[in-house]
Length: 462
Image 1 (cartoon, rainbow, N blue to C red):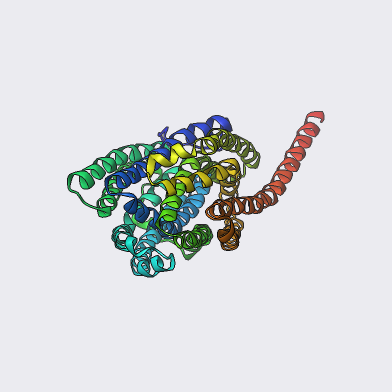
Image 2: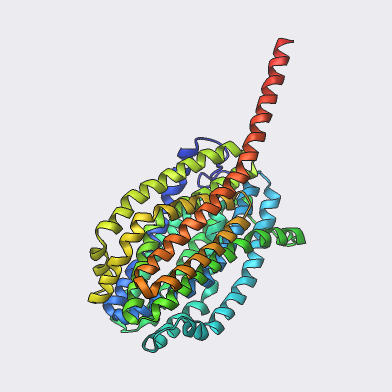
């Protein structure tokens, strides 16, 4: 296939390939975070802190549902990348066709679940009655349009599996400008409330989908035909078997975050606003390491499919290096400038003070989650999604234990320590799993190489 945008990670310099894939992927994520960030600024400044709290309060619920779909998409993408790395074009097309079919079913099910579950979920979170109307409005629009988000997740996952990180970047750039324009138009021009922000995001997502679909259609290797959709039962089971644990991991993690949100909301709107602000900044400052994890996943998947195990080890070093640089720069910002960050989004004295308690704690320890993103993605990329799923369970348990035991004694800082404890626990599990999976492969590869060299030497002597 004559297409330079599709990258074979099984050959060439690991550092050059990963960095070449990483930068467009990082810019994609940064643009996505940026327009989410500006979206919140427009909501907070244009409608008020209460509206910001309402949109932020929906974050954990949205992550519960969309995170599930994102996990499934990521699991499917791992197997697609392994087929690409193994040069199995027929298997590649069958897996993509099956992914499309499963995604359609997933979109219908999750949309219905999200819309029906929303009112009860908000009550479980102890959502303040003053916020309930805006939360329901924003939530019904978002969950009712869930198929749009799932469609983008699937298309971008397939592109990343094929080593194309530039098309999602182009899609996000265009959709970001559309989103921001519509935010201003709907909120300041048409004087809409939180529904304006929700509609702007959904419409912008359609732009992303169009760009990704156009790119996918131009890749001849994956041009699908009717016969490709006649999948064997084995293909569906492989995809579901790899996707479900990753989906459950995201949802289990979200449940832990929802419990934290429940405790925080119980202290009133000021705490809800502060937690929403802190969550936005954590998502923003985790972004480079999370992106390194995405690069690690695509790189590992292809090389694992090609049985190039030594290249996986080299890739791990590169991605951990990216995470360390991210920690030094962004962790420092969280430690030294929490008040500046808080006042960019909110104005109330109490929420600002709470943010200043939370961010420095996470800034000092964010290296744990930065490394977690990379190592966990490596485990998943090698086709072992179960250990990361169990690490998600551990994250949930630690978050619930810390917030329930310490919120009453140390206050809002307990929410920060709940995050830190969850990161460290999950990291330990995934480091152990990564070593257990890769080290035996490396030993076998080394032994095979030594045996081959011995045969060559023996042949030369004779």
